[in-house]
Structures are given as C-alpha cells and as structure tokens.
Image (tube, rainbow, N blue to C red; front, side):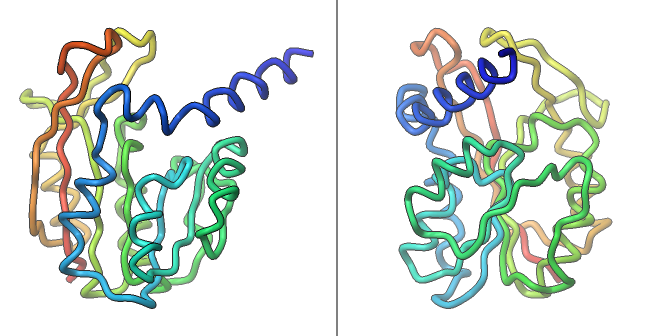
Length: 209
C-alpha cells in the first residue's frame, strides 16, 4: 500500500513537471541548448543524464541528434518515453553505478537540474569523460556557492535539501577530467513562493580534450 502511494506521488510529479518548470521560470534546459548549438551536428549521439521528462534533450533531438537518456525515476522515464524522441532510455542512478555504455560511445552529454542533488561529483565527471569522445561537449547546470568548501548542503523553501558546489571545485573536476570550459552563464529562477527569483544556478558548456 505504501509503495502504491509512493508510485502515485512520483507519477503525479512526472505528469506535472513540465508545467511546474514554466511556473518557476526555470529555463536552464533552453539555455543549455542555445549555448551548445554551435557545437552540435545532426546524427550525433547525445547522452542526457537525469533526462527526466526530456526537456533538456528534446531540443537536440529536434535538430537531428540521437538522444539516449538515463534517470532513476521510472515515472519520469515513462513521461519522457511518451514524447517519442529518444533512441533508448534506461533506469539508472549515476551516483551508484557506472554509465552503461562503452568508452567514447557518445559525441556529447547534457546534465540539467541534476548535480545539485549530489555532493561529491568526482565519479560522475569521471564517467562522463569516459563515455564522451574527444572534441565533444558536456553541458550541465549546478548551484554555486562562494565559500571554500567543495560542496555544502542547504535547506530550501521546498522542504528538500540541495547541494551547492564551489566553482573552484567544478574547475578542479574539469581539469582532472581533461575538459575545457567554453562558456558559463549564471541563472536566477523563482523559489518555492513562485514569485521571487531567489535560486541561483550556473550553466557550463565544456569540451572534452
């Protein structure tokens, strides 16, 4: 009975996710696409890590890229599958498993609205570097903070905790994984009150060298 209630809650969240994104003026997915556009070509393979309902990668699919998606929520994957634009979708937890594709399988990868739910990003960046071939781009968002710690946990008005990451920590991960920063853009989205722009995020576009 508890499991049925949990599945219903996730289903309702997945069904309303796209609408909620617009309500919060959270358009990081469109920013990622626009900032990445000059580096992509039709026919290339794109991995969307934490694909959710597909908001970040459907724009790439519309330009002819072949999209593969990973997410830990079956309900989100079902919502994404209903849009019929992906090559393959897999139930997957990036924080616990290795990406289930061979080395250099993808031309590019995107990860939008995901990294702020994880503290230590070392394995995630290592795995992205493994599966994306040289010359490809990695486009992602994260929640920055200005302190010395690599990452810290923060309570939000939504009643959930997120992780904020130091830009120095992100720079360290890029250098460690042989990635070059091409572009960065700071974003503001509305908080839980859906009125004030109180949540800051950063979008980075990087090239695998």
